[in-house]
Amino acid sequence: MKKLMVGIWLVFLFCTVGALFWYNEWVYHLPTPVPENYKPVSQGKIIKLNGPLEADHSKPLFLHFFNPDCPCSRFNISNFKSLVKKYGQQVNFVIVVMNNKFYTAKQIQDKFDLNVPVLFDASIAVSVGVYSTPQAALLDTQHKLYYRGNYNSSRYCTDEKTSYAKIALEGLLHDHARLVFSQLALRAYGCRLPNCTR
Image (cartoon, rainbow, N blue to C red; front, side):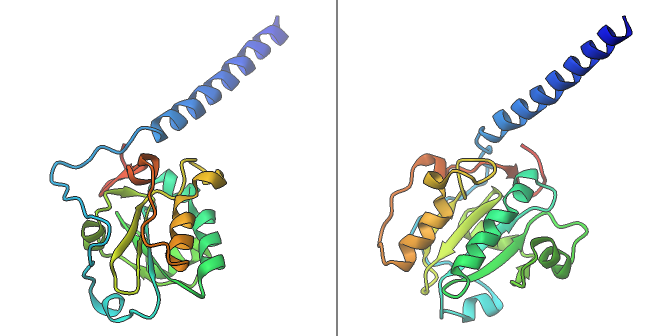
């Protein structure tokens, strides 16, 4: 009888874990609700930035919008690091931290194990039309918005066919004037700003 009870308990435990995993995957595939006051920013628009970001036009600029409280953002760290490793000589990468409560720039750099600039300026998200994390925005050397959207259709960024941020980087660096992305690339998924909610 004892073995039967332990077996039932283990089956229940595995089913619960599986259900939670399925639920999280399902929630991830729901688009992030568009805020009521959202103002879309069109591809090709010149983005006005402040300080050193505005002054540097030597390379394209890749803005990574990161929320330390967002599980989707944390799942995306290794994918972002791989992009920096591959394109870091050709593109300036910046981490824009959203919903920061406890972190310093150094702590974020340590979390990513990268020495890239870290900013805590939520106005940058508004200027490029970002309202969830993780999201990417890629600006050309004239600071025109080339791409704003998702990294991948997969929560763990493992689907090479839908590596949207990587495709955008390749397109910009190889002078593809106008790439066309699907709604899976452009419709926001992940955690709503400014708080980590669906």
